[in-house]
Image (cartoon, rainbow, N blue to C red):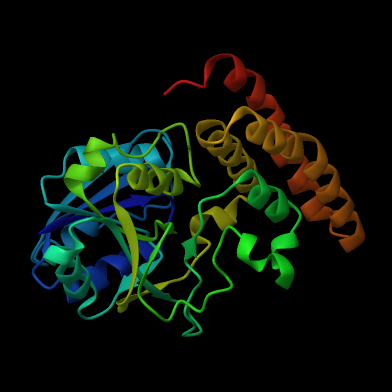
Length: 314
């Protein structure tokens, strides 16, 4: 059995559509759907308990008065879970027939006992297989990705996201994205869950890295599929999304790189990249992107002193 944990923040109708897909395709494997609502104001959780009360699984809604962040909300859900497996599922996903059965059957095979996390093939609205796996970043990967150089063919193998691979075969990878992140409950709790210093972005990558350090694998499984829109509700707040993306990069570099590597990422992120971004928006004649860039970096510079002085310990 498994518990599905969904973090909701103004997901609107997507949340109801996702719940409907679980109701139709839970394959009698789902014990509880745990929805952690991060102070949504769009009434997206209204009617969930009533609308799906006879769907064959329990529904547990945890309502936060403030947005505590994605990783923290996931941990809240995991604390009340008692199933063997946890599935972290985004509201902009839809399960297909046998999605859960195939994934759980794979994880239960004796020869896959060292698999800690399983991700599956994600299909977008154009029926295209999404490039959903990632490499563990290095200072060089962060540097190249900061300026879009990873899009050049010569640097394809240094891209954070594995865009150079067609995702049409099952294989062990460094990381599968958190849109569909199936993990052993005992292992998740052994690793103390997601690092809550990441408000959003890279908390799942950080967990995958720590999982590998414990001797476990992440597997991308093509025999199971689901729909994933991508972008999610963060498209509503692009400047804030930029801030949290940059912040998470610095957190990851501090947590997992040596001092020299961290200094490279810090210098690139705080000095070189913002100049590049501003010039780029000017060349595009995009006033909105220009403002979003300035707002995002203003928030980053405002957060940095507090983090450097007080926030480096977990």
